[in-house]
Length: 453
Ligand SMILES: [Zn+2]
Image (cartoon, rainbow, N blue to C red; front, top):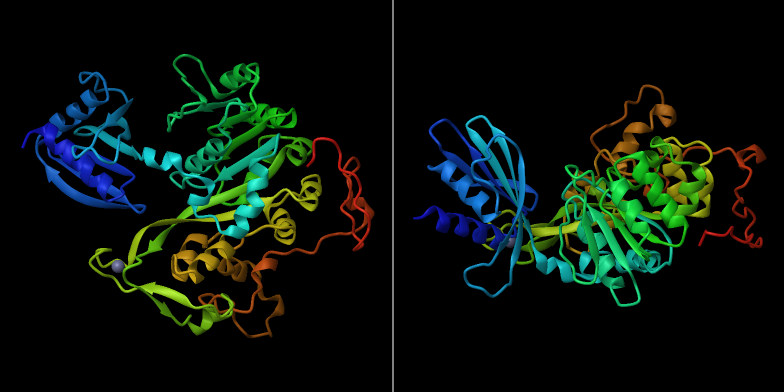
């Protein structure tokens, strides 16, 4: 079989399986090449072939790259049409890196069919979407999505842009790289070779009368500062940030030197996201929750995947996102002026409208979309996970001599109050310039300062 045909078949097969990436890596000096695909977040082998260098060269030709340039990392794009036609074009991003034995190439598959996705298609629960959607329709402010690489942040933000994309709205983006190509949106790619950095492009596009701005990622203080400023001066700004949980976005902004004032006034909400494996619909079945977990999930029924032919005996097929939603409530705005340890901020957020990833996961597990084990696996180590709370709350309430049982989650622990810390309530707690939230029920709400929703 020709190398051309082989490469096409790998791409088609990977696309069929819903893979996100294809890896091509030289194994040895004998020019053998291993091909693997990432499906549902896990790497799986396809095959090992000879003629590795020819395969890499073919990929570089497809991406319009110089096949003779082997000593430096390269990036390129491929527009691929599956042989059967049908499902339309597939956007591929190729990256190569020199390594022992030659070059390693990774193809990222960008399914343009995900482009048409609306907010409703993204796996938000109705409850969360009802809370989140008004932020996306606001005339100004900052919306942040956080999560690990490959957690669907860009797809989420593009769904918002798609919902706003009409003649009356000028939408501009600065990205590294531009992942989706969308008509009606001005997209600019940063280029370090040309000196087109995030801050530089962002400053330029602010002079172009934008309504909505997407900043691919906030990585440095300068970008953060411009993004916050833009969102306080009549622009809706969408961006991503590297953090594991929603409260981490606040910590990052504070670490980057952003003032409490700009964070409190600019930020509308933070969404943290990551993918869970979706239960196979062919073989999932109801199970009674294990006794230790029953109260944790409110005695809801749970599901498991028995494994069948359709899911290759894994019990899972595809992925479902889990989300954490953290609105910048008045209480949270106030607290960024005060004690900004992660625990303190988390405690305030939990008391003022946050839906944690664990809660979202339990809801989805109860709906048969994934398993509780999967939710626990993904939220382990997060500030809001039941396990980490059990771990962090030491032995104060333990009778002497009783050892904590680390393995079992504490079924009775109310998730809402995890990590809650006693909070001072004296007047010194109130920072000048910030209006305190009313403390008496029924007390009239003070008028909001300008720039705050
Ligand atoms: Zn199955």
